[in-house]
Length: 462
Image (cartoon, rainbow, N blue to C red):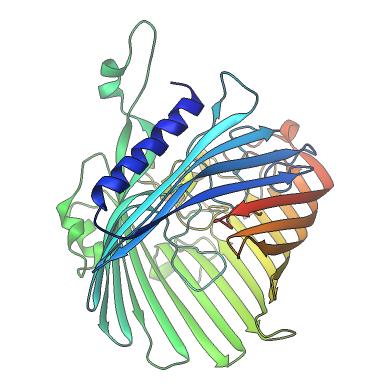
């Protein structure tokens, strides 16, 4: 089955399922389309070559009684300077795979999400395959939507007016082949492989002691090899305690965030992520405290009634997200579940957004930086061998982006036209954190024009 046949097959199946399940209910089906062209590749790729990403599909949204369902399927085509690393140093969500077309130019991908929810008074259950992000910032350092969406289920419980508990369990893609099953998926003309199981369980308690203050506390665990572990279904018990009870084979993370509204126009926030902690070494240079930090400040109603200006800084230690047993890495599809640039990284952002009638202005200045992350470094982490940040054969990769985009709503606000400009200075472009090599990197400065059009989705502008 070729890509076009596959697309129409999936569309027909979607129509059939929706029509069968909701024949007695009101529901909405809408078309989805987007097309975005970047004259020099933008931040998708460091080379000064054009890239275009286009997609079309269907979405549905249904609400009846206590149930709701949201689903989208999009067939995506990529043209121009495309390879597997197109989203490796981009804050955009990564693709689960990229396939070369057998019958035409370009590459193909699919985007499919479904979220089914049941709401009963103070509790909401949801399950499906969708994205999730925790925290008050533009980015997230604990649970973000950088990796492709993954199957999950969970709930939100509004315990009190000012206290909410969120829990979910997700099934990740480890990208580690299960050699014990390889024999069943290979023959003289074909070969496939299944991945070793990797899962995540996480819960978050969000408290509003006052109208101005919000405090969030997170905990997550990555476990692998076995199937669904019922121990991690106990949503109100500390995951750290369960991980120790099971023999300390899994990977636990802790985090918290605080958001405080200084006045009606100004809010500040702080987020903290912890992968490991050794209190007695906390003030030593060679410590065992593996942290990530986020500081932010945003102000609204500056020049226009609906505008917002944000300053944000994110910093990750080189030792977080990775585990001594790689099967327990805080990753899915080889993409971090937390901060988009992964460990050993940082980013400073100034962002301004304003809505003026049907026009939306978005301007940003970002400086992102990441260092190497070799297998030797991961081994040294667990042997308490000190590593000086941003050192090695290629110390780091750094990129400055100054961008401005204007979009105008069309088609009764269901669509939008976008025009933008980016200036990019990319130091050590082509850097591979796992295998850094001085021969593979270069310093590139470029400008890029971006033109885009969307219908019923606004996620592919930049």
